Image 1 (cartoon, helix red, strand yellow):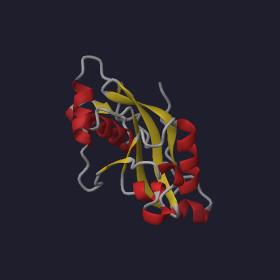
Image 2 (cartoon, helix red, strand yellow):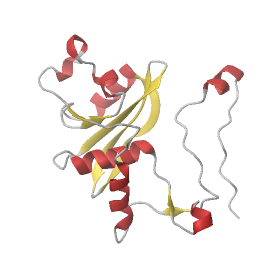
Image 3 (spheres, rainbow, N blue to C red):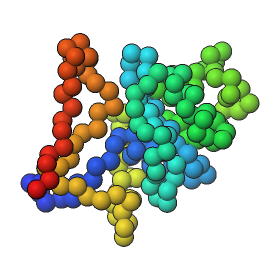
Length: 170
């Protein structure tokens, strides 16, 4: 659609847009960790830090087990109560009730409501794009390559790598 209409296209991941929205909503926070349930006892997540009206990736977005992400989270942030955590995988990461992570027993983390069916990321994207100097550059529609955080079940079962390759620049 961007190519056909001549509109600018920006390559922004869902987790990055979620993090920007989370920090726009929670102005008193500087860290965000969007977490989506990836099934297979894993979550898709990333750790982001406020950078003006947008965010900087601090820990690369990937799929990993709950405990792996929690360990990386604790190694990255000074206080586990500082970041905003959101997404349908947030409670898988933090635990709840008697299964709450011990590091969270001194206080409650800022859990931001985020519904993947009705994402509120458009506001954060619109603010960033409307800036005099947006925090990211537009990309040509023919050079955009999706960022897959994990191989599909079919790829795993068949031992294939079907990740699209970036087109050669001429």
